[in-house]
Structure formats: structure tokens, C-alpha cells
Length: 270
Image (cartoon, rainbow, N blue to C red; front, side, top):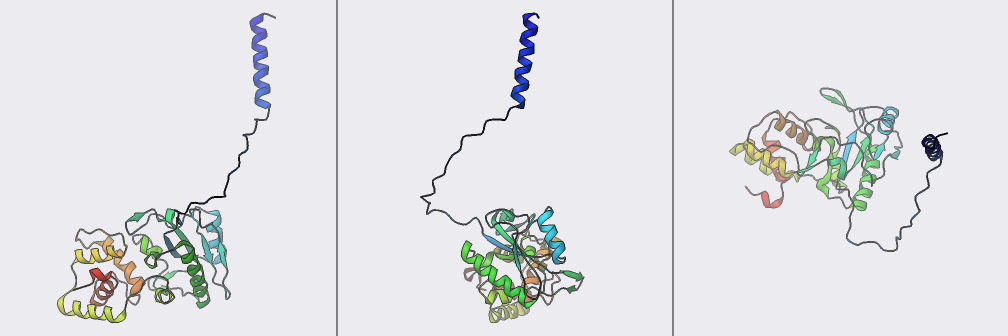
């Protein structure tokens, strides 16, 4: 056999043997964990509450096998179970396009909690939450607040962080009960009444002033002074949370009084 043909044959055999052989493993390494930095904190800044709008089995399948996920799922059984579906330190896909206090991409910095609940049954009818389910949620939230040092204003609903797309957890969710347990913010009724009476007598805030007041609370809203559908959607989200008896997106003295009562003290003088 000519030398050049013999060389080609040997080269081909060498490549074949190389391709069939098992790659050598990367050398192992060890990590020393004897020292831990003091300058650190949890990645979690928000706790976001949702409803599933589906029964437990369907919700579990969606949240574990679909394109969305959540850290926790709380059932609506007489003795609710709490399922952890994603570790707190990992990112779940529950918030979608969202923003709170100017921070976008809430998935990156939040823990999502889904409550098994049918949600909106008709334009003006919503499924109720069970007392036991809310008790389980409160216990979970209290634990998460301690673990991750969550501030009250960052315990929010999906509708708070995505008011143009979402309405959960809906107007029947008991935000005041959570606030009484030290979870989330609420308004002082006397202060809200005081400001409501003022606005009834002197006139409502302008569109721009209302937008600024909503933005102060964390909502993503344009402050261009135009009261468009996007602004109404934000006000609907606010009303569902703080004045659920009527959530029409229309500013009235009661809504304006509550909105003003929730402002930081430094911004609350008339």
C-alpha cells in the first residue's frame, strides 16, 4: 500500500477510536464553607399573592408541568395543605410583565403564592376564600417575612404589580385581615374619612395628582395628567384592594380619601 494511503487509513482508525472512547472526567474540586460573609441579604423583596382560577389538580399540573410556576400553592381543603413547588432561592415564573415601586421583572425578586380559588365567576361574582385557607396563608407569610425581611408595602397582589393584565387575588381577598396580622399596609379609617370629607367639599384631586399618589404607593402608572384606560386600570386594582365594595375605576371622595390616607406622613398634609 502506498505510504500516503497507509497514513490516511491509520488516521481514520485513530479518529474512530477517539470518537468511541469515553471522555476523561474533569478533575474534582472542593469548596471550603468555613467562612461566611456578613454583607449579604435575601434576594426576595416582594411576596406576591395569586389565585389559581382552577381546581387543585389542574392548578398543580399547570404550576409543575406548564410554562408558569409558583413557589407555593395553598389548597382550599378543609385542612389546607401548603405545597412548595420552587425553592425560595430560585426564580419562579408567576409574575410575568410586572413592576412595583419602579422595579421591573418582579419574578427575579419575589416569592409567588397561589391560592386554589376559582376567581372571577362572572363580571360581578367572585369565589370566596375559606377562613382556613387564609389562616394557612397568614402563617406562611409571617414565616417568609421573618426569613427574608420583607417590608409591609411589598406584600402585594398580582393585580398590584400588573394592573393592566391581572385582577387576582380579586376583591374578596381579605387584605385588611392580613394587615391586622402585621402583613401589608392598611389605612386608618378616621384619616380616610377626614380626607374624603375634604375632597367632597373642595373637589377631587386632579388626574395628575391622583397618578402621583398612586405611584407613591408603588403602582406603575404614567404621570402625564391624562386619565386614560391605563390609569383607570390602576385605580381599579387599588379599589379592589382598599375599597372592594365598588371598583369601577372612577375617582370619588371615598377612594380619594383612602388614597390620601395611605400616603407617607411627609406627603399627607393638605
